Amino acid sequence: MFSKFDVIETIDMVEKEHLDIRTVTMGISLLSCIRGSAEETAQAVYDRVMKKAEKLVPTAEELSLEYGIPIVNKRVSVTPVSLVTAAFPEKSALVGRALDRAAKELGIDFLGGYSALVQKGTADYEEVFLKSIPDVLATTERLCSSVNVGSSRSGINMDAVRTMGQIFLDTAFLTKDNDSLGCAKLVVFCNAVEDNPFMAGAFHGPGEADCCVHVGVSGPGAVRAALAKLPKD
Image (cartoon, rainbow, N blue to C red; front, side, top):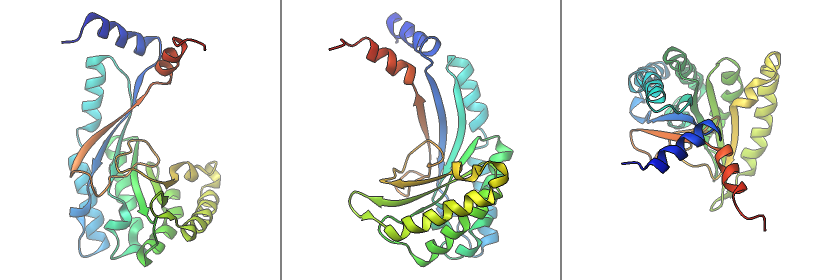
């Protein structure tokens, strides 16, 4: 049971300090969706996301009303698509567009995972995949992309860094009529984590369960209030 103090403190955080749940992000593994062709894989990916996330938005909205805490975004993250399309990287865009279509139909704000993990080196299929990013971001609305180019253990893949510079330029050019918005949906990481709920860098790591939910809390107001209570010295 919650004490009266806990209840009042929570109400103060929500009403006075602007605490909210920034996102509820469902992570979905796509490894079971790999088929013999890009077209079949794209359809399997679409079907899986539609099935797993069909109740995400209504459930989040129901919980928000029940507890009186805003849930700002409902999102999905998936297995890095470069792993799913390794056998046909030149057709990775088919999977990306299938994911975007599912996000639109489900009312999901953003879907992350058009991603590659190249911190220690870039495989041939990943080189092809990376080149598909600008066009995919230019032709989708809710799909987000990320690339991990380094880690504390492996160092930085400088070839990938150079490649990403060109990818950002290409993305900016292809989306120039929309304030180069594609670049806002593309993230470059070092030390990327597998369960990041925030966009545009969310992806469902290979070490995660088949399907899980991650919650991202945004509480700068609550943090500010806590700091204000500390002694000035």
